[in-house]
Length: 554
Image (cartoon, rainbow, N blue to C red; front, side, top):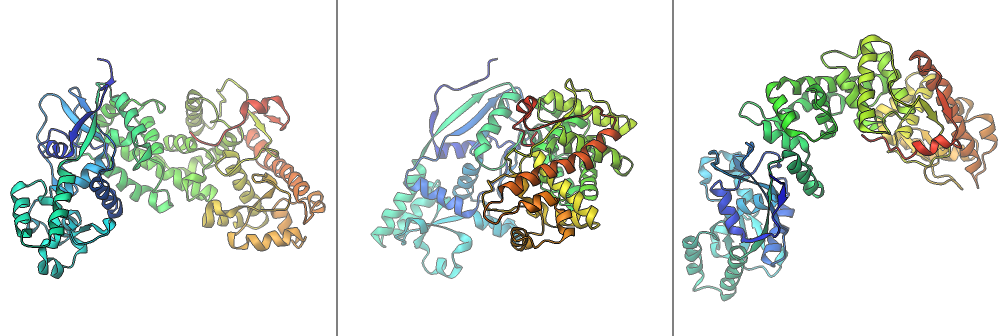
């Protein structure tokens, strides 16, 4: 069957979509996030409907070939959970809008069935239209925002949205208004009609391919709340005993939070999980991964154990408390899979050398296949202690002294770590303390006269609170010899300081920085790993042109 979108959207009443959800004809898959909109976002959405403004199309996935885990509630409101016979229809895009409307227009369950906490949650969903206000931005109010005494003293001032779709209740409310203010009557009609008559375009994706659905879903939601392939995998593997996203959050808190890594990108977790399951990390293959995970649910715990050891390794060996400071994200994936079911201590020297080499040789600036080969090489190196360079091109390191880059670049992150290492040489623990305490904020780019943004020679590892004073001391040559040595300011560079034009100084210092990286890190690491001869490319070499542009991403 060919994957296809319906050629033209079907225009339907919004109320019919809510009815289909209430009856289980449209279901909310678990790759969608539950309601995360704030009240301000929900209120603005109601105002758009009242004004007749477009709210965007809803997208439905229709399939008879897949069993998808679905939510049994929208907010505090229960949904049908009986299995679907025949074709299943799933809401792919629009869950925030539909949840907002479902909660407000169909909030009919008795509040007395809930404890106090759930009662507050329900009242957050119960919305009224203030029929007296002249400001449209003040039209909609939640139950929790209206003093009970006000509601009791003048009940016809507030139209409950949850009676708009109940003809008998709406008629009763309107009768109570009959002898009252004509303005209230008109506004009640206006609000009720706006919601009852509102239409939306409905786009259907008819597809038997989970890969197409996953890609479509990711692209659709790239503009909204955070979504990922992990959410699709959650829907495919969900059972009462296994909720992937729930376990994901619990393992983040248990394994990663102690090291500050609890907010690590879900894409990194997913790639680690795929490797644990023996899947290809660069392919969207939800069928294969979900089937493997169903058979091996412990793989998730093993994955997070490996990530926890990786976080501990980077904290202890590089003082990194934030995964975004690791030069390449794929380095996290590689080390986490190398540390499956074991602790890092026995492998720390090898892993440290590998991080330096893979960063300076820009090992992950090429293809996905190259990255996978590099991951396999690391596993073998960790196990045997013998490193084999399996890539087609021999290793090479280029100077970036004349390359303008920002902190996203892997090599710039490496420079920060190199300066931390240098600071530790001058004063034990000083560099690591700065990285651990301030992260990337400790790697300051100083705005100096005549120096362009991104000039490597203007980057210094300093306490952010001291940066301004440090800049002044630098410009007027007030730094002592130990501080100069710590920041790799040579005698030649020192003589080039000019408060009106610091570019000659930063150019010379940038070259000094690379010399330190080469002599103190790159060459010793290459010798220990037997990666010789290692080519060092000057910034004028032709090969540099073929390797530029890396920003340290997967």
